[in-house]
Length: 278
Image 1 (cartoon, rainbow, N blue to C red):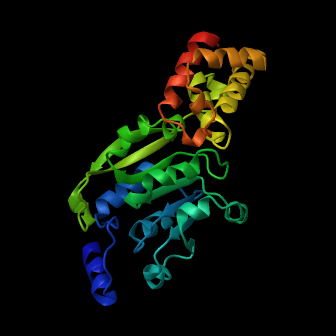
Image 2: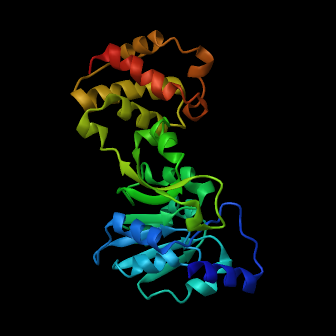
Image 3: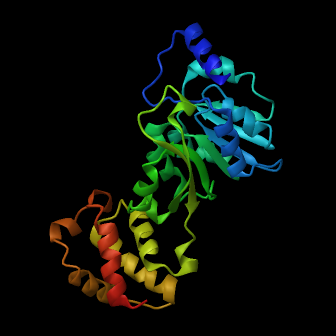
């Protein structure tokens, strides 16, 4: 049993379990996750946080290749005996996936499947927003609360729709988490340039221009959205007039976009959509 392997590993290494280190020990749940991901022998799969490699072995049995990124060095010996089609990379997955050099030298996956470390789950999604390295859906075991959280989140909710597939019993993990877990598919929201979705377009625009002042980001976003979605030209003066109608305090307009209240990600495009008629 997988539980025995976890307990023997802990007994041998005298290692404390980290707060969000929940080993998925239910083989049925592992098989279900792989089944939902529909892995085949042409797939290159990314797994974050393989731990003792239980899910990794199942993925490797179906996929052409697997990239497994593990932060914790205590698993090095165990992961060294995985099948030959598994490449184990030790490091911080969040930092690596944000690293241009890593993305350039690492062949991208076409699927990503993980029992994701819970404390990293939401931040990890940011790696899959604007980067072209991986643009598919994500199939994760993660806290159930992420479904509503992501679908109502102003930034990540502009890139993903979280779909609950199946609740995973707490007894499927060791140790048992306090939170309810689930298999969740984070489905990629289509390019708003193609769907002509102004709200999604504008929320993404604000997020990708966080280093700009708010007034500049909104002004240029109005001009870009009008052109990209309706092939309509709007001047900077016209854009400024629309910004004045938003009644955003001057001190807020002078802030960098990454410092504004997240409510603006919803409020600004909603109001602009009414006025722009695009």
